[in-house]
Image (tube, rainbow, N blue to C red; front, top):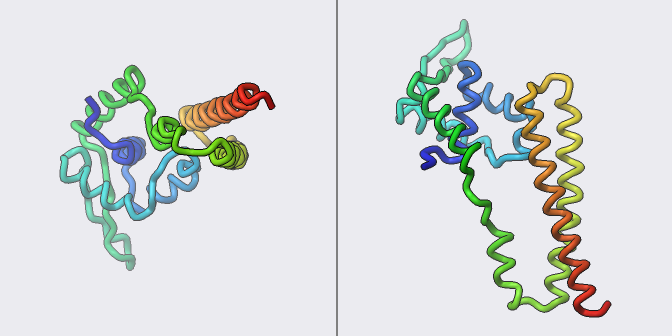
Length: 181
């Protein structure tokens, strides 16, 4: 059973690479283009760091470098590394089914007119086409310095988005055929 939220998992995995300050985490998230494929808000980082520290999966050490203000450097604990290991195995071997906004909305299609359904799905298709371009550009920007495991994240996200785009296009075409258009 998952014990970490996706945000906690992402933050813990970054701290596991090397001890970091909160601001360094933000820079790493930007550098890796993580906001292209996950939902990590800047304001959430420090809250999650404190929560993980309170759960004894991170430690925090205050540093005062020269004339700069005191900063907190976060490191993963052995318990945190074990938790991250177990969560990684669980998420790879038995991920949660993806049921979200889109799936719930599909269940309510009878509430919409055919025109509303088509308009909404065509808007979603256009959004996906644009988002795919953004992620492809981000992946290309990252190519020279991104570790292979991070490149895999971009590939997986692109595959999922293209699959969703294909499904929407197929669904729209099948509805045209059904309606004799």
